[in-house]
Length: 147
Image (cartoon, rainbow, N blue to C red; front, side, top):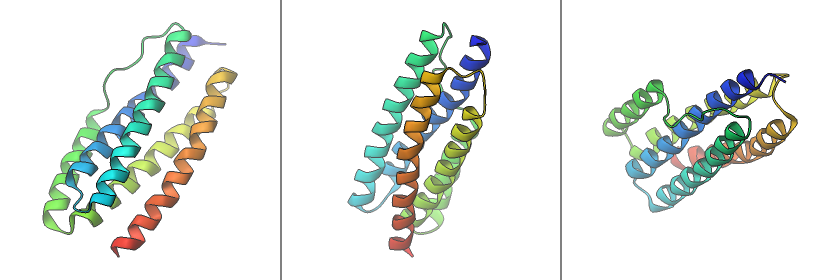
């Protein structure tokens, strides 16, 4: 197995998980309704836990885990601010979160395509995919509630 390829792949996922956690925290800040604030805060905590597990896996492989998210995600959070200011906060925030979740699911799918990824890492990512799918369904319900 090529640990460098594996750590690069996992670091790509890690950056996106950090972005997701930061995005959920921003969503909780911008949301109007307390039920949405609470949901987004719980999701941020969940994403931080996922990120910690991925970080541990990277270190077990002898790699150096990323500590920050991406510049693109920072720009996305600025967009969330602007969008929320221009229309219903909850609707704009939920739409932005949904887009971020779709991107995160794509990163997981892409990582799982790597044959060099150790079995333990693949199992971890597959387990988290289930949580991501469940979150996606919940976000769909939130979108319906704001329509």
